[in-house]
Length: 484
Image (cartoon, rainbow, N blue to C red):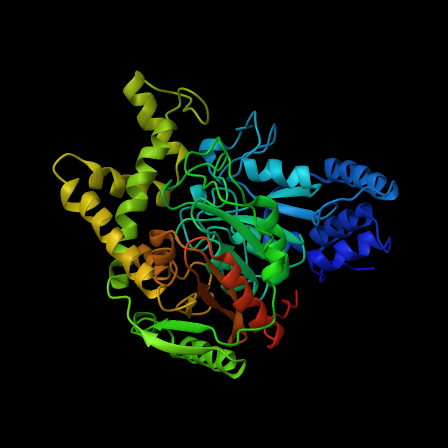
């Protein structure tokens, strides 16, 4: 039997009912990978033998009648910027091509404790810097709906793997939209949790005040299941929030009656494809039909989000990536003349063009004489943007916007125009700047390519956005699979 089109919760129930074994699920996943991976390039590394051994252990525990978690025995993929003990963690960069961490990221540790089976590490834009997964040092990932188009980024490998049935669930990281944007372009569900809800320990940092780990899944229920597994306080992460544990499955209620939705006019202006706008308005009408109400609102400072982001994120990247110098670990140039030349050659050879571009931008913003004019001012605008969201949530349960400006673009179409690439993040970056949660769910199609709707919630109110997303999903048929 082919299982790749099923959701994680569907195969979980089959495991519990003894209709399938974990070994069969793992073998099915690797059979699917064998069939489609040469076309997609979703994975940088897979672990078939180890996965089968872990599946045998889970099957034994199930046969012994042990009570196991929702993810026990389920094959899962992990983005290759999350540390895995003794396994290459490359960030899709030549700089870390042979790096094998001596420890697991907290999220990996939590998944393994749940009995989840990690089958591989997925491709990404180098150091999570990009929106297309074209910036990987090793390969370009393709969109399962159209192999000539990008899957989005930087978590494009994770999104493509879930979409194509190469994994039931995957972890991604989101700094400016890197979970939600590829989820939208691949027609699946992508959740960026509140900053601090999920530990970042073991996530190789891009921009530390913006990065957040979250799930990519085939449906909303799977997203809630994965969030249950990875959320929670971690003393090893100083930004981790010490919040009471929540069962997010309890928020999966097919009902939005009485809910008030804010719809910011700034997200429906120039630069957003008219067909995308129309899809979101139709989605809003569906929610009204189901008992919600919406009003057009204004987030007056959100128009400054993109320039604010592209000062803060590169500045933090410049600082975080300074550690990759050819001295301590990672790539080292073969020939050099003195320490300064070692630094220069190592970083020139080890980093790709987009990473070097952002390091240069960030270093400039932090330089003496420019700090106040750029970085300090951007941090002040960040506060204004956050205040806009806070004020909106005093009146509204959630905010709904497009996730993307348009459908997935062709591979190579924006490679030589980084500004056009950056503009594609205009709908997603405000969420990271404000630190609030957001989920992208399928909302329709433009030219047969999927488009997502973004549902934004107040800080630590994942329950509301999951409820709205679940209700919309249960009352529409946009959650279809790519025909690969």
